[in-house]
Image (cartoon, rainbow, N blue to C red):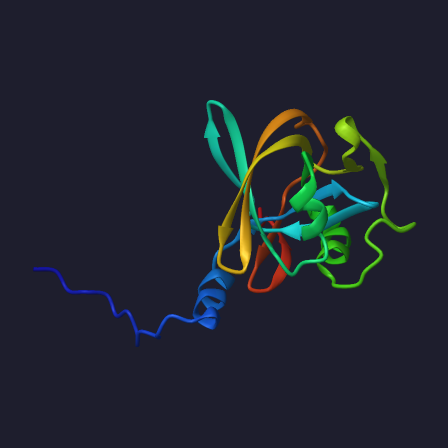
Length: 168
């Protein structure tokens, strides 16, 4: 028989427990964009590769988020993988009430009318195939239709409530 590791004192499941556990989980940083009555976007750390055949990705978005109405109606969305040089861009798209597509943000209109951010590590335009209710969020599943994986730099990470770079 082997000794059990000290697991500490269990905490009853709650939103705070979930947030506390996921603060310890390093995640890549993406910005999701769409076009509604204008360009919208938000920072996401929930981006996941779902399947290779057919290629599918997913991300979560709160139904109270300012970007939700456009994402809820969009046929296509943009997925942007941010580089460590884009901490301020990540913070802008994470901040409530920020002018996300203002003069400080370099972007253009891409395929299917999707706003595309400049200078990212990689981007894809994806066709939305499902919006699945998940508590106060929706899990959006989308199929990439076009993209570019060849941007310069190294990935930006989110850990312990902060944007971080990889260590060498």
